[in-house]
Amino acid sequence: MIKNIQKFGKTIKELRIKRNLSLRKICQLNGYDPSNWSKIERGRISPPSDEGVLRKWAKILGLAGKNEVQKFIDDAIIAQGIIPEDILSRPEAIEYLPALFRTLRNKKPTKEEIDRLIELIRNA
Image (cartoon, rainbow, N blue to C red):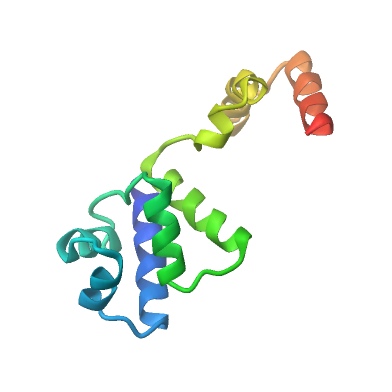
């Protein structure tokens, strides 16, 4: 998880610099504490979990497209070690998370789990 926090911090720092915004200026624009922003950039603390705050940050950092903004939000949520709310709100998706976790841990899912997951993807 620490690597994800550091990766997100590096991303927002690069985006801030690309927009020629000082740390103080970006914090004036988004109303965020400069000390905490700096800690996020350095990978010392997690980004906020509030999607509204993250959308505001994305806009200030110059992210325009829907996919760019959603990736930014997803990266922040991943940095926190949280499963995104839009995934958790889908009962059928939650049912398959254990199979996904086992697969990611290199433990083979059962044939039934694979078949159900394929069906879920087809119906998405």
